[in-house]
Image (cartoon, rainbow, N blue to C red; front, side, top):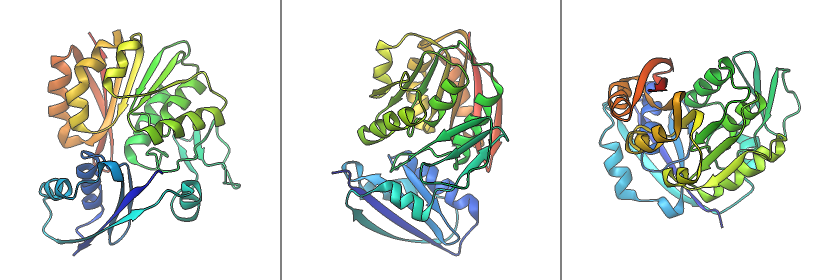
Length: 282
């Protein structure tokens, strides 16, 4: 059974949209997968196997805004998550005027060069979050035909799918959460790219994968800085690495870890304080 804990956080007074982004970042560091912000606060989801109330207490200690946070945790039994997203959250989006992301239940879909179908269930990555859309934008602008690519922490598989659509091959996607990995397999099939190799595992799974021309990781700062040596070892010399899942304020920390692992910082893009760093393997 794919059960989840739904954590509802209400902020009073509401400091602004940056507050919910920051909470999402803090909770993402301890395993929360999906976030739905609104005008009063944030609803976040985590697998029951990872739920730890004391961990939430510790994570929220890093929240800098002066406001009262009330919270309620509810266990949600496994359900048809496609139906949940259809009813509540997921609507078609267009990224970079070239890529439309929608689910199989949508009917009014804008036309675009790249049409990606994502049935997200409970896995992270529909293109709505700034970190996902930032990397999508980078992949749209990069020459990918004939280049190998690794997508670390693939979630729904959306980044790997776009890369394959743009001619990248082979494409390897790695996901630590078993439910999300199954969802990614379903999504790559939905988009006609079953050749994408979706592996269940963490950075240790890279041991069986050849170094790639492009390496993508949209996770969080702590995981990235902890595993970046393994990432770098699986990127070819001169290859490009795209990192996201953290704020622009975190760039110096990530850059220091990257340079120690043999990577050169090139540039970054940002949206709503979230960032996507571009690095090159020396």
